[in-house]
Length: 158
Image (tube, rainbow, N blue to C red; front, side, top):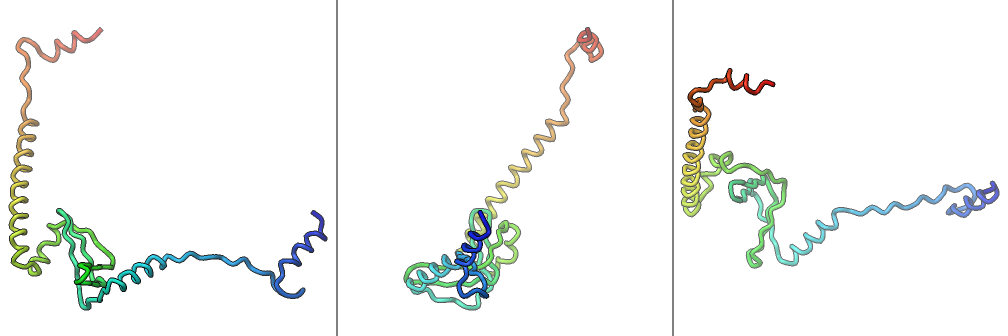
């Protein structure tokens, strides 16, 4: 390409006269807040109300507890919908149990008793298997009568 043709192409990019800046290409940014806005609009349509002053939310799932500290909690009783938003932490039930006993009601205390019974059943079984394994390690097999290691080693040598 020659210089004249380049100057002609460069002059067509300008938005104003000879002394103006070139037009910059507009960068299109895709925002991640669109999903959040759609979710909030859907929740508003359902009729969700914010519940203030909740310090902690625990969601129990098998032996794991998903814990939210200082979450934003919204609820719609009519739609049977609860929204808990915040940063979750996954913890084991044994680690969190002493801190949440005072939060449990009478219904949950029975469930807690069942969990305690399950842990007690699992603990003796685990202890019994370790004792058997230790006994197996201590037992040394007896030698076959009439044989010793020296003769067996000499026979295998070429």
